Amino acid sequence: MKTLVKTHARMLAAAAGVLSLVAAGNATAQELNALIWCDHADPALLQPFEEANSVKVNVKEFEGTGAGLAIVEQSQPGDWDVMVIDSVDIPRGVEKGLFEPLPEDKLPFPDLFPEVKLDNYTVVDGKRYGVTEKFGYNTIGYNNTKVDPADMQSMAALTGDKYKGRLAIYDYYLPVIGMAALAAGKKTSELTEADLPAIRDVLMKMKANAKLVGEVVASQTALATGEVDILVGGGEWVTAGLAKENPALDFSIPQEGAVLWSQSLAMFKDSKNKDLALKFIQYIMSPEGQARLATSSCYWGMPASTKAALTDDQKKVLRFDEQPGFLARAQPYPAPDADLDKKMQDLWTEMLQAQ
Image 1: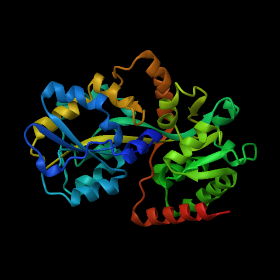
Image 2 (image 1 turned 45 degrees about the vertical axis):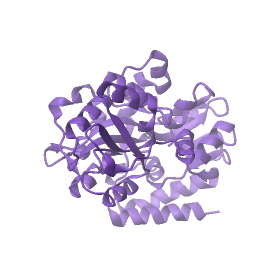
Image 3 (image 1 turned 30 degrees about the vertical axis):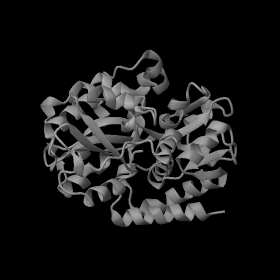
């Protein structure tokens, strides 16, 4: 996820330098080197695997697929064993010759929510190069004591006058452009340059209603502190981890749908520890690993496995039982080609600069 990525805790963890950043070149048979998102740095996730296998997992966090691939390009072959990557970006890694096909018979694919297997991204030329481990939604996050929850069932609430000045917009162009596309009746997987005027119209109306456009910390903090009542692009990744502190924070999957973010695990072709890398992937996909990953101290999200060993309270916070209906209305991240991606970024810049 995304990129994916994405919470206050994530940014604080990075700022404090509490992640274990170990030089990749020092790998031994008892070490596994992983390029990760911050949810995988949680000791509660890593320690059980390390203790069970008498190994050390060395992790290096990155944000965004581009940054992760840049690290790989600056490394030596074999420096890295596994990587967390936006599911939609698996083909990019395969095209670069980075990843090893995964043995489907040794991973619990039948346990995954069918909608998040994402074969059109994780399978290339008949071989599976990634396994979805966690997912969620860029959608409408809100304070249910400050707004009418019924209004949050339609994106029309984001562009009308009722909540003017009470919105924050998450400052990441792809998911929010995806939301704008849904509001305009478009499919995120079929976007072309011809759709940009309609998307622009929605974005500008959202911006006119927004008090701020901010990155993860600013937008989440604005919602949590009451500076705003609605976060465009929010979701369980914002609200679930704060549920105990502020149970009024909630999210909706409106009638128009939501943008599905999904993160996958891949194994490097040049890994010197492929057996251990597979063991790590198997652990993450186990019921226990899935539960620990879903409730990571950095950010929460839905486990890809229907058999994740979550408590009843954790399932309630993640709205586990509602997922079939949510997934039926969700659409994937936009995956534009380079030309359309530049035009989307230009549109986003125009929206940011609009008064």
